[in-house]
Length: 98
Length: 134
Image (cartoon, rainbow over all chains, first blue to last red; front, side):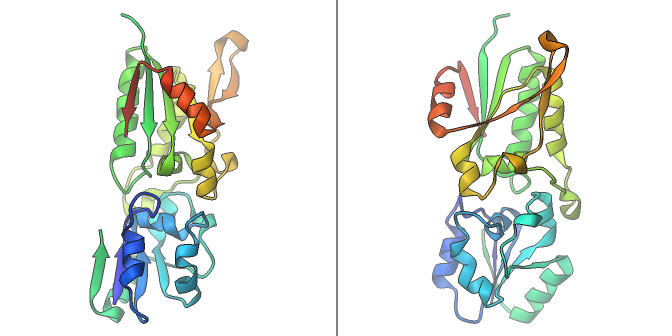
C-alpha cells in the first residue's frame, strides 16, 4: 500500500496515525505540508527507520516550495509528479492521511 | 485616527493552507491605516520566512518576496520564536535577510527579524492592543 501524508507532524498527528497502522511492505509519500517531516528536525526520528529501509518518499515540488531541499533527511527519496504516479501504480491501494 | 498596536501571530507553514497568504493580505491593510504593526512567527509559521522558497513546481505564487516590501510600509518588527526554530532544525541563517531603512540614521538598513524566546514573546504579546492569529 501507499500512504500519503499531507500535514506537518508538528501540527497534526496524521503521520503518527499512519505509522501506528502501517504494515511491513507499505511505503509513505510526504506531500504538501507533509514534506516538513522530510526535513532534519526534532521529529526526524519518527521516520528514520522506515527511511533507512527506502520506504519514505517526498514530493520534490513541495520540498522546493518551502525552501527546505538542503534539509531533507538522509535516505528520504525525492520524487516528481511522474514518480508519484509510479508509486500509485506500484503499490495498489492508496491511503490518504488528510 | 488613534494608533493601536497590532500583532499578527503566524503559526502555519506556507502553501499547504491559505493562512499564511491571508495573514499577509491583512497585514498590508493595517499598514495602509498607519497602525503600529508587528508580526510574530511561532510553530510551523517560522517556515514562512525561510530563504529560497520556490513554489514554481506546485504552481503557486512565491509570496515570501512580499515580506521584503513590508519595511517600506514601516513594518519592521518580526519576532521569531527561538524554540520553534530550534525544534525544526532551523536558525536565523536559514531565514530571509529582511531589512528596514531607518530615516533617523541616514536611511541605514537594519534587520527586521528578531529571534526571541517564548518568554520574551509572552511579554511583547501582552503589550498589544490587538492580536490576530493565523
